[in-house]
Image (cartoon, rainbow, N blue to C red; front, side):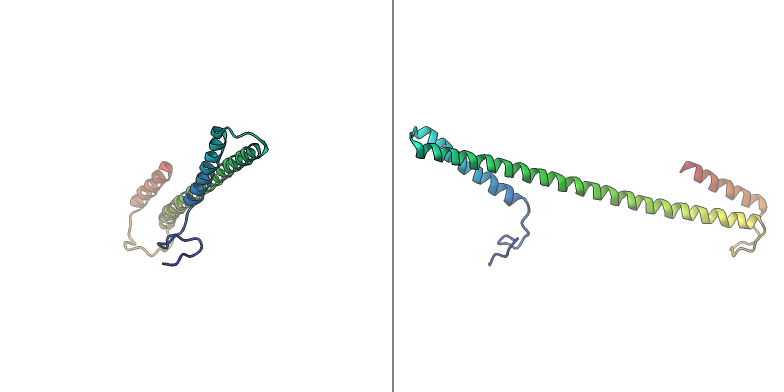
Length: 144
């Protein structure tokens, strides 16, 4: 199977896991060379330069790892914010629909109380029943 850029051999998209894994592996390799140089007890400018070079690589890998974690945290926080905003938006839409329904019901009842012509299945609703309906809607609005 041929490999495509940004995909592994099975065709799945690569995430941040391989990047972190590569950074850790490079850091471990650099640490190995530092330990090997120290254990060998090699003296002289070449051994000292090699240790300095490897130590710089280890520090670079640590900074890269920290940067990757910082970016992942930022993306995770942004995703959580977007999910919360989407949930709030859906909740707001549902509340608006409910309020709109209650408002329409209240308007219908008030129009009937005023004697306006309203298309209603039971056009002969008693005034007492209409007042009771208005009070029910008002109670529902208070609960909100």
